[in-house]
Length: 257
Length: 335
Image (tube, rainbow over all chains, first blue to last red; front, side):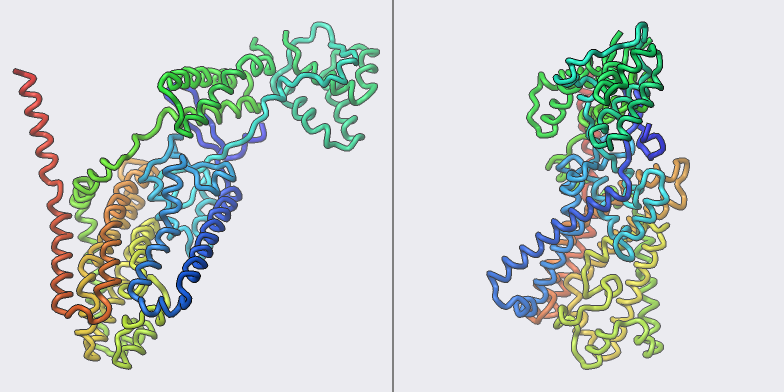
């Protein structure tokens, strides 16, 4: 319901089902990049400290070996600009440490895992996406493409997808032991609810703990009334306390007939 | 009428969790062969559940969970072939040079753009000495005016921007940028090539005027030929990308881009080890006067010649021999 308007990656699998994976937006990507950039920064700081521990006069060494130092710096720059991202994406199934933390992943536009070429392309293109500073070009590209892809993703044919955490337990959670003493009435002859109503009730029950008491009671009452089908005295019993209301709703959502 | 959502989830959940667990182990690389069969079965069942959820419980968390689960299973089962070291060897033996020969006209266009810039820059400075004020960075000009080479102390000069001063600065930035800016409809690549050509041409002409020509030759001759070749190849790759954008042919632009991007990046990846090797030459041999100019020039020409001989010859007969092998096998089977 909630994800209907957000962009997604549609994949037709050989099993003839259509997958719809949620695409990671700019916020996720920005945070993941920050994590990776911080890691790289600390790597260079550590490298610098180790180097200056071994060699006291750092600047003097650089000037003395200008040609060699340039080579080392070029290789180091290369490593940060490219090797880190590419190696991580190839060996950790499309995830750098930052992406793993944010639970996003690079995949091809057909949903399959990326290979060396795709990763190499999208990370080489960072040079252009970064222009003129802090991924301005990349951000514009993400704003104007449907699946939030930067130029590197367009060229490599890749998308970033998001992985969500789901708690399936909420569908089958047993009633709390304390509440089982209360009699739960179910309207006679009521069939199973439509899946939207089940979702609605379960979403409410999940959040109920954190609601203000008044709002909690009001929402519960409205839910019960929406379901309907209760006789007058049953309704009074169900609405007597929030506990009874929620117990009724849970039983109603999980009714299997 | 379908069963209720909680009943469906409750009934099928053990299978999904088993699949989740198998997928996690598959990612960690600790799955045995018979478990792979089970993974396949479970994936197919989950796909059927997804189809069921799509029909009867669209938009619910259970549906989205199944989407994600099947996405992960799909990724695990339909993996691209894993590239091993053998593939790397094959890439450099055959694929990279063959790709370069197939896309030779792009490299040729890139080279002519670069040479065009080179001639323009040199001509401007030779005909109108004050043109150097426009084309050559201030730091370099100061050094030349003082009769010294800026390459004597590269780090203290720190040229103003890495893209523009082609010789002295970071070759990698130049190479990557020359390729990557092809995504700007190829204009970025064209600009980078011409601009680098103009810079190098202008600097050379300035040095020649001020009597530093030999010193410049001393510095660039060892690594110049290979390095400029690599920049040219990267330029060719950038032009491939630009062409895919401007003229995608019968494919949609996005697909043409992804298809040609793969070809282009093969050219760039192939250059990487040569670029690293030539960086070592530039770091150790080019600066200073450890080696005489003649030796450096000889080395540069030899390396350049070897590089192009490799590009133009390597793997040329490989396809021939493999077809003849297949032919031999076929004929032996006929007998």
